[in-house]
Every structure is written in structure tokens, then in C-alpha cells.
Image 1 (tube, rainbow, N blue to C red):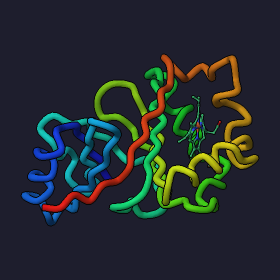
Image 2 (tube, rainbow, N blue to C red):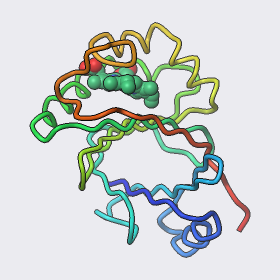
Image 3 (cartoon, rainbow, N blue to C red):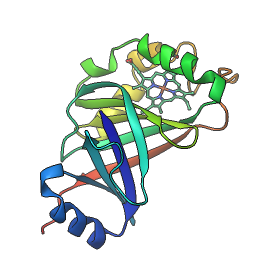
Length: 168
Ligand code: HEM
């Protein structure tokens, strides 16, 4: 399965979504930033977008909810190690209250993997982030570790969005 995302103005992306109804584009927004999300068989969807292969997925990405993406730059030689770590991940996030979906996304260009999570609302994400399940998932890497794992090649950054369903 492939994922593509692109940024654009709300008007432009609403129109694009209407033109590609069968592809079920989802929209999300953070202040003035709007992102369209595609998931499916097309290897690449947008003219100017970020394209990914889905390495791992649980749950269905929905048209409502709250999205948190951890964007992690990974070195070329670190890719197998990174992916292996996620194959062996603790696997508790999917049992948390309000969890909707997770996607581990391997970039087709560049070096930034995305750990995409979707929640019913922002509070559900915050509750997970403050839980012992989050701590367990990050026992060997994560926010509280001063020393980054060797496969990380840059500074991870978080992006958060609310799903939106604009009137057409
Ligand atoms: C910048 C600090 C962080 C780093 C370096 C990091 C890295 C990692 C790594 C390497 C794993 C795989 C398990 C392991 O072997 O350690 C993991 C698990 C995970 N991380 Fe992070 N992480 C960070 C913060 C976050 C944040 C803020 C989120 C929020 C979306 C997140 C989402 C996840 C999820 C969903 C899992 C799998 C949990 C499970 O299976 O239950 N991480 N993280």
C-alpha cells in the first residue's frame, strides 16, 4: 500500500478531493496549513507530494480525528535497523483509548520516515503520551533519551493536525 501527502490551500485541496472522489482523499489542518492524505494502490498521487510505502499498518485512517506524525530522519544504512525496530515495536498503542490508526511510512524520496498515528481527539493522544505504554514503547529510544539511536540522522520533529470535512 502507498501513501501520498501534499500541502495546499484549503480551497485547492477541497476541489482536488471533489475531482478525485473515488480515491477518497482525506483532509487535515493545523492553523493555516492544510494537508491532503491519499492511501491506496497508486504509487504516487500528487504532482508535488511526498510519497511513501506503508511498512506497517493497523486500523483505518478516518475522516475525523486528530493526527500526530513523528517525522524521523534515518540514515541510508540505518533503514533496515529502523524498520526492524518498528516490526518488533511494543504494539500497545493500538489498544489505547481513542486510537484509530497507525502507519509506518518509508519515504520514496529523502530520508524522513513518518510514524503516523490517528486518534479520536487530542486528549486521547496526550493520555497515551503520558502513559506507561508510551514509556515502554520508547524504553530504548524516544523523547527522554539523550543519546539518539545510531540510525537517526537528524532531529525528529512532530506535526499535528485535526481532520476536517469541509462542505463542498
Ligand atoms: C523524538 C522522540 C522519539 C523518537 C526518537 C522515537 C523513536 C521510536 C522508535 C525507534 C520506536 C520503535 C521501538 C524501539 O525500538 O524503540 C518507537 C515506537 C513508537 N513511537 Fe516513537 N519516538 C519518539 C517520540 C514519539 C512520539 C512523540 C510519537 C507520537 C506519534 C511516537 C510514536 C510512536 C509509536 C506509535 C510507536 C509504536 C508504539 C507501540 O508499538 O505501542 N514516538 N519510537
